[in-house]
Length: 470
Image 1 (tube, one colour):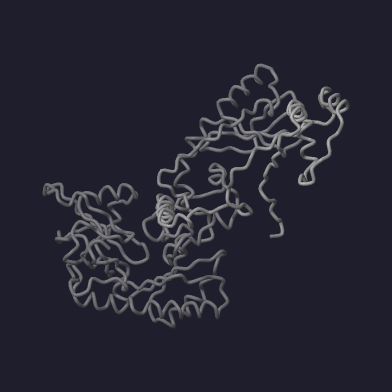
Image 2 (image 1 turned 135 degrees about the vertical axis):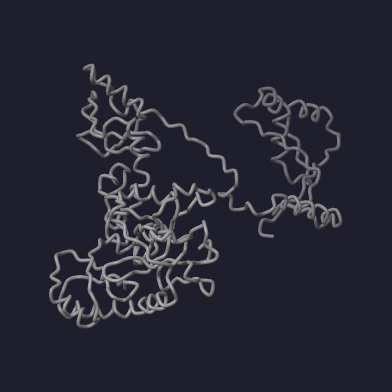
């Protein structure tokens, strides 16, 4: 709590050595983070004495508040422990609000000034001791009360127990689904605890507020922190928000529908006011189509044919209104598949690069590796360059001439070879077929060779063939 006092009226909350009957020294205007505390934003304003409010808001245990009249004009502030009127005897509570805001709270809760009880005094040391001793007994009394109810066979659950400030009365808070007969139970409680017994039935929501816990959202329950009034929640709230009717997900720890379903209901109703009715049907050339789904955020409606509801077609609400207007004029619209427009994918820009896996890696790391490799190659030129596998050192190879088609030989070469006698081939030419092909490919060179038979023939050198098995 902001002020550190935790004066909630419970025995588990105490201010420590600074707590006195007049209240906590640190508490003045801030209140605290307790559920029943109220921020007094008019505390710094001096009100005129004639118009001063005589009523004070006092809180007790178990989320209980009431308004009391300060008939003796006792100087009180937030956190003061006071003794108030009760029936029977007196009770001890903590002041939660003073000043003009008390009138606003009384008007809001429709509290009549005539029924207000009066404040006796500020709690003295004896009142505080009796009050704290009574608070220490509550846990043991609650366990004993549950055993007695179980022994009698009553279908009820004792949720909490509250002692009055002077220990003259015990209030038992219980939950039950059916009506419970307390005649025998009250006799057993009175004989066991030797005091006046008061039974109060509460709902399951109030039980969850008293017990507390963590909700599915990961935060403490709203009813146990700040929510004081419970509004009714029904399944129509879930339907308006397009939620699946799943009791396990929609129910809270109290077993009822979650109170937070009402928080955004007004916004959904405001957005749905621009939508056509969910029972809208479209008369198309292919048949009737009905609305099967509504998306409030995208402002779209999904339609499907009555005969085949497997294929869904989504349209904007503006287009749906135009189609409904055509049907009202007695015109049939085109089939849904013809009205469907191709969606243009929207490219999202990832400004903070959440989707990049390598967003924490340095982008110039590859460039550094390349620079280091080039430096190493410059220092060792023989080792830096890597030749492809299967290739030796490059040599100056002559370009091969394309082999012509044998069926397209020139006629002059055939005539010359037929008229002139064949010359014996020298034995040192091992590759005669290659020369024959070359002669056929170049007839002019063959004629020049026949005209000069004494010209020395040079063998053309080719690089040695590589052995594939090497």
